[in-house]
Image: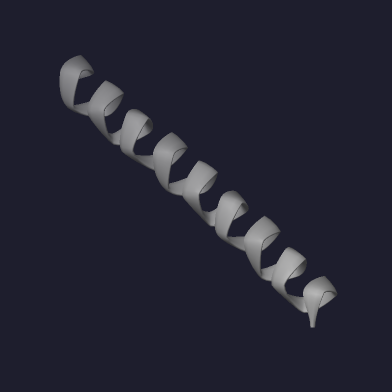
Length: 33
């Protein structure tokens, strides 16, 4: 069970990082327009 939770946590962190990067990219593209 703990292993499963750890995997879920890592996945959430990855998704969070991707969303962060995506939002920054979106902001950058908005600024460049």
